[in-house]
Image 1 (cartoon, rainbow, N blue to C red):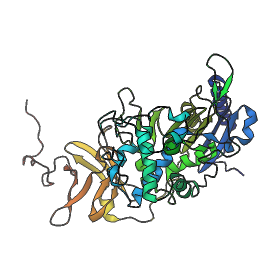
Image 2 (image 1 turned 90 degrees about the vertical axis):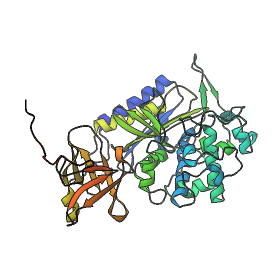
Image 3 (image 1 turned 90 degrees about the horizontal axis):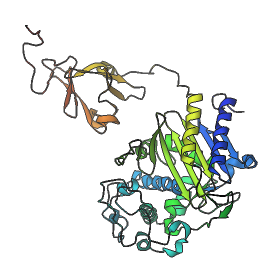
Image 4 (image 1 turned 135 degrees about the vertical axis):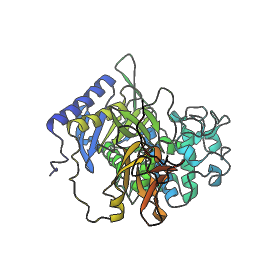
Length: 459
């Protein structure tokens, strides 16, 4: 029986079906399947035409560049195991590519300056056997932009990352993917080659309601950039993993790192950026993380709103027409707005550290007021009290310091500075001094404080 907290209301289900039906009809695609997940599992699926609905969550479609997110997870696993560092040059682990000075992080975030595509013929419609070596994938003109200066999407860049995974693990990318992601997460309907039931890819004539089949190629070395087939059921589970992590695959802290912007947005694209193997967009006031994908005959979209706890996947079998990423974003919005997440009940802490409790309350940076509160995870939260301004959450680090997790002070160190008698004098946050009173006389304010203290101004 479905839990009342996870089951969707009939009105919400109808709104979801209406959006899917509209997308399939207006997008002129032979079929469109979609799924929505929350509270740990898929709670709705739908398909058009309706004959597909009975097996909507289990039919494989090609997912194109959503494959890149899987490849990125494999790279992050290598980092977490200490086998590489994201700042390492590629040459350290995969010598002889000719672009070895670019870093692993730059490849993950598409800031390595590499070309968007491999040399002709177009890799998506030709067999991978035409590109048996990395030199065939990279070609002669590999550098389009200075390294690290801008975001420039690169399919060959993810070919390099797939080869990196294979080189470090001593196994094929496919085997590593299956052993380290697909099997632990029970993504049993995600595979390198199609497994029945699977959809056939079509091109729809732009001016007539007729079709032509698209070729389905084994992409060879380019597979880590776009090879995979999957289902909306599997993708919904994968999206929830991107929100929560899973200790069997990648811890929550590393998944959060993937969701953090790694490169500046392009001019005119301030609502979109890229993390480490994931796209990040702002849509209808919420942040969505995931990826879009396309290969001849197929389009795909996958988003999760971590704050709302809602994910959506949309798959179609047409080369052009509908926009699955836009549809998936709408499905997330429909559920999040119609059925907002029910917050966890407030509960008092089971125990308290009196020294931490004594730090809570108002603090002042100059005359700017901030509030420091103790979180239920024993972290600290320092936020402006007067509206906008700089603030961050902090987690405990070594030697009694606190490390910023977000906002302006991300990565910065917060220290509690004591007087000789042991009382707290001030907080030092990246050289900023926070005092209990504005410009407190004996609190170590840089530059000192006028000894006469506060005063009025005579006319």
